[in-house]
Amino acid sequence: MSYTSSGIHFVDEGSGKPIVLIHGAFGSLEDWAPISSILKDNFRVIALDLRGHGKSPPIGGKCSLDIMALAVNDVINHLKLGKYVLVGTSLGAATALRCAIAGIKGLEKLILIAPLVKGSSVTGYKVMKFLHRLGLVNFRRLIINATLKELKEHNEDLTLKIKNKLEGIPEDFFFNVTECIASVNLKDALSFVKVPTLIIIGDEDELTPLKHVIQAPRKQPNIQLKVLEKAGHLLILERSDEVAQLIADFASK
Image (cartoon, rainbow, N blue to C red; front, side, top):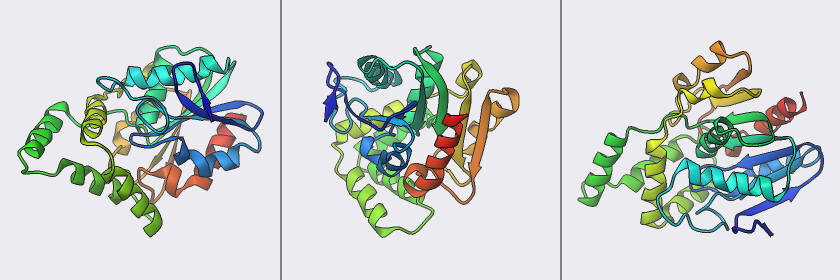
């Protein structure tokens, strides 16, 4: 196991052009295992645990994209990477996009998978949170059900794994991260990205609707869009082979 001086946990495998992988909310670097196992044959693959996730330290306050982005920057600086490809999924994609528009050093290409570019409205979130506190709505159950609904292929083992993980999250941390998700609004941020960018999204993704990202590729020649048919939000888990190939092809160009 490897850690930066601030305690951010990461794994570093393979050799070649570096690809840095950022997981989504409530996940860990282990979520990338099926994809990393393919990519590491031809690339140097670095996957990290965001702060508060996996084996990295707690967030230690209010969750934000800036805090998540600092963890990514910490790993990149620790490894003294030159040029690299930055890949994120869901909240990890929002974090990668935040890194890109902040001008993170060495970024050569950007890959956003099921990118969270516009979270739920803060007002709506606060109402749901209030109703949850009153016992009128089980907000955690709503989130779990919405996540499991994104599994478009029947896989009992994967369904149970995700369900158990989400149910085991401490409530304070759960609300801290979901509030961060609710506050995300990067819909216009894509216009500030200058590096070659690939967006991969499922046509049945209800957590990150296609309409939130469809306009950018039409306006910017540096952005490509790949829509996977009959696919939801959990692309790196359900369509790992296909996603790995898309990452490899784009990184190799």
